[in-house]
Length: 492
Length: 141
Image (tube, rainbow over all chains, first blue to last red; front, side, top):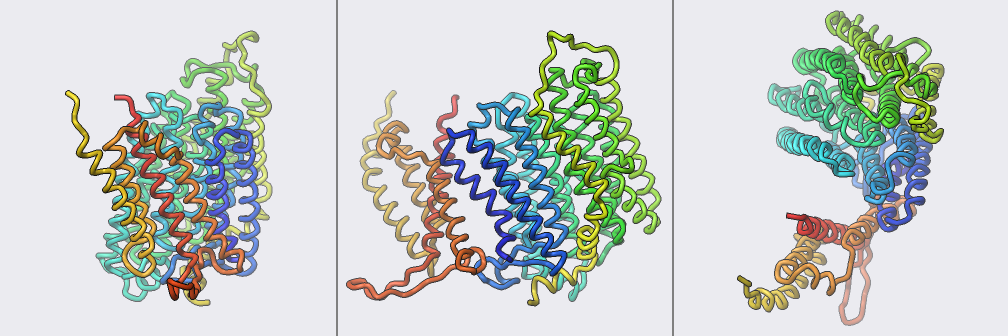
């Protein structure tokens, strides 16, 4: 059973490696990537089921017991995210098959996607801070390749910034890890948590925790998001969807893990700062989403708003808010991928990214229009759709904590999301039809199917939230009570 | 002006073998002493870099007709598969084992699965380093 946890990272890795040997069989590349991601999703669902029934699963590599060896730890929070990652990336791959183009496919597109997913899954599952650094790098290296794939001038321009900022933050990450190892003599997260709890979170540790905060903020786009809109809006839509759905979420996961498991003793300092950063992120993201008239930039700024929104939960740190954040994270992964895919389809048919150049698409592409409308509703949090429950729980949690400023900002940001996306909807889908019947670029069904699956998922999560509740409660329970995690890793 | 590279080329022809020997020595000493697959692989790759410097890319490619991207992939595959080998025997991922064999002439020799793992590591290192060097040199100026 325990080794299954490793397979979640190893399956994509191994398939990716084998695909490198057969660069000319693109058909095999396409379908083996898709199928292996689906298999991985199935495996992670199985593991999730096991965790909810029997508690946290751990595996110590090479039988070196924790805290001496490296371990993978699967709790409900991480495996839920792994499950969502695999499903969403499988669907993005389905979209990529139809849109990415043969020349990019031949430049090892699918192996890189698989390595990226392996890195993301590894980051969610690892129980060791240094190993987290390694899996982050696996993910980032694959993302460097994906962001430059195609090599257009704009892409290279933006990817330079992206790589520079990530190299800087990775080196800061390494420095922070070194400080922590120097202070506490261990890097196993459960062991660290235990040691911090016994020695108390000294001022020195708090400073180190702020260094971690800076690092993960850079990765997740909390406050330090200035690199994000540019680099998420240049690669091809399928890649942008994978980035928008997955990459910032890994940073958010790391923030949740470190500030609920390790540095939760001085909340008046660390969590207050997180709260302020989340507030500024909400404001900044909202301004960006309203200010621009480029579809891809507006969509990218929506990613930033949701980062701020989710981290409000970490700032108030109570179980209701954390539960809300977990649901919202899952919802956001699905719906952000959907948003990027739809934006990609719109730009594909209209041949322009500017709002002013596109109008009246609903006549030519009614299905696309309606799917976009459902996405807008889901992102805003209209009841039967998936965004609602996360927002409600998070809102209740913030009210319980009496942080009314954060409450106001996070709810107002919902209006901004609605406004910015309705602006796209109204200007692109309503109005006079600009594309005549002869010029109409046919939007194949196969290009709409991935988006349709994601639409069904967001509706499904909305209606089936009852079924998800046990997993989410278990996830929040473990996050709020570090001793559950520690006991599972260190005492068997 | 054409630079005379006779010295560099003749020295390289000898030095490369010394470097290769050192690489293999480092590789095998790695189990209990300083060294190992990563260092061995780097030293091995340095011999390729030296050859590329002394001769030109065409000559080296003609002499060693190997796609180094595939070398890297092969190495990574070996690493992951040895890790999974332990899973087949019901042990935790990456568990290593060893046994001491009595081989005539050589005496007692310890053979361990970690050597296969290290072989994968060094192949990956060689493949990646040489691929990087080659792709930088292919850049149009």
